[in-house]
Length: 446
Ligand SMILES: Cc1ncc(COP(=O)(O)O)c(C=O)c1O
Image (cartoon, rainbow, N blue to C red; front, side):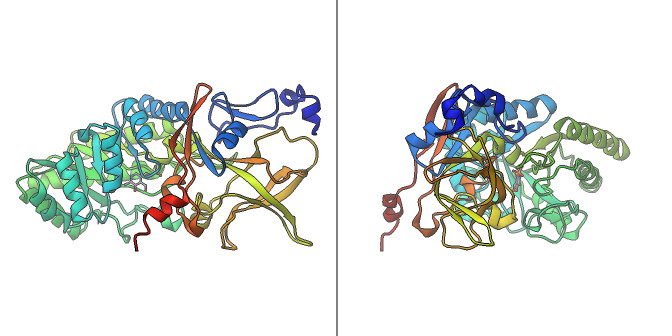
C-alpha cells in the first residue's frame, strides 16, 4: 500500500506535472491518484482492453484541426493520413473541415469507407502502382500529386474525365532533421528538383495531356520542423517556379501545397511548431514573392499529419519485469516495444513514460524501458525517472504516440498489433481491435 492509497488527498497536492505540451488537454490525476484523460482512467482502459493499447483522445484531434483552421483561415488544410488513419479519424478530421491526403489504395479505401467526399482526397506517393492509380481515378479523387514522368501518361490514360494534378517539386531546402525524413533536398527520391530540366519536362508533358489539369505545385520539406524560415523560403522558390511556368506556357497555377512536417514535442521542453508564426511567415513570403513576380496569390494548402494526431495519442503498457544489472542499468520490461513504436529504432526518437495506475510517491529510480521483442535495440525510453517501487503488473503510459505509431506498427515476433481505443467525455470505444494470432494465421494460406 502506498502513501497515496492511505491518504488519497495527497494526490492533488503532490501531483507531478503532466506537461500540457505532451499530454492531451484534458489529462489529470483522479482522487485515487490514477491518470485520467478525457474523464477516463487509463488503468481502467488497460484492464478492459489489455495492453499494449493505443489510446486516442478525440477532442484533442478535433481541437488541433480547429487550431489549424483558425490560424490559416484561407488555406486548405489536408490531413496526412499516413500519420494515423482509421474510419473514425477520417470522419473527425473531415467533419472539422479538413481534406485528406492518402498515399495508397489501402488508405484510399479507409477514406472512402468513412464516407469522405472523393473530391476532398489528395493522392500522394513517389511510387504509385498502376492499380492504385486506377482505383484513385475511378473513385474520383480531387487531386493527384505527380512524382515522376512515368505517372503522367498512366494517369492520362486512366482518366475518363479531366483529372486535376499537382507536380511535386523539391525546393532544395535542407532542414535540420533526421536524414530519413529530410525530403526537401534535391537529391532524394521524391519529386522534381526546382528549376531542373526534369521539372520543366514534367510541366510540359502534363500540359500536353488534354485530360490532365495542372493546378499547382506541391512540396514537402521533411518532418519535425520547428523553424518557420524554410516554409518562407519554399514559398519564395515555388512562386518563382510557378511564375516561370506562366511566363513560358501562359498557364497560371492556382494552388501551392506546402506539405506538412510541423514539429510536435515528444518530451517536455522539446521545440514545436508555432502556428501563428508559421502563418505570418507564409503570408509575408507570399506577399513578397507574388509582388516580385507579378503573380496572382495561389491558394495555400498545408498537410499536417503528426501535428494533428501525435499528442492525442498515448500508449499503455503493463510492466512485466524489473531487472537491476549490477554496475549497469535497471531495465523495466513492458508488454510492447519496437513493433508498436518503431520510431525509437528508426529515428532515435526519445520518449518519457509515467506510471498511470497510482500516484508515485517516495523515491525514484532511473530506468530504461525495454520492449519485449527479440532485439537488444528494442528500447522504448532510456534513462527515465520512475518510482523505485515499480513492480510487475503496473501500468505505464507513454505520451505522444498518436502519429506514426499504429501506422508504422508491425507484427514482429508474431505479436498482433494493439487496439486503438478512442476516449471522449468519460467514455471509451474501440476503433481498431487487437490483432490476434487467428488474424495472423488467416493470412497463412500455404
Ligand atoms: C507529402 C507529405 N505530406 C504530408 C506529410 C505529413 O508530415 P507530418 O506528419 O510530419 O506533418 C508527409 C509525411 O511524410 C508527406 O510525405
